[in-house]
Length: 140
Image 1 (cartoon, one colour):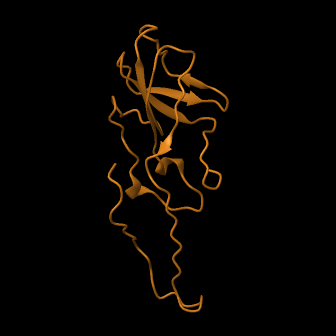
Image 2 (image 1 turned 180 degrees about the vertical axis):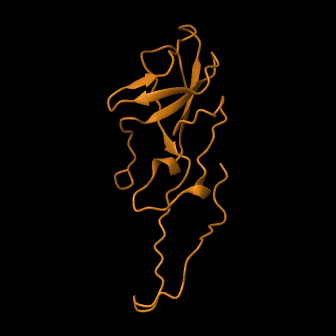
Image 3 (image 1 turned 120 degrees about the horizontal axis):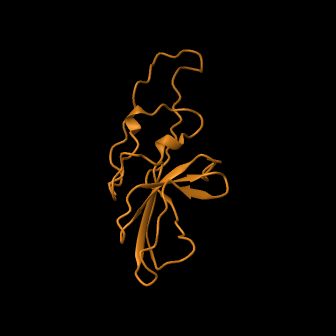
């Protein structure tokens, strides 16, 4: 993360699912300039539409279009955003055979920053904040 802009960096891994051939949860690793699949994905033919879905961060336990989401209840809050607390999703991207597939990722979660000031005059701190619960949200 750079401010509110997210970018892939060397070592990042995404999971890709393609519906026509049924390739499920194929990992693609990023080396800073290019993506490399863990196993080769082939186009079934040049005339049929193939539909792609992808997500980040990769999780080996994901299967098909069922993606294991990061457990936010175990996250530790730090001054920098942890990629393990994020979930990016892409798709559906439907196209016929081509040299590449353009995937646009969006955040499935929202980054919220809470600035909590506790204490009196910046000296006394009579409270020990244990938990913050935010009800509601978008279930999709």
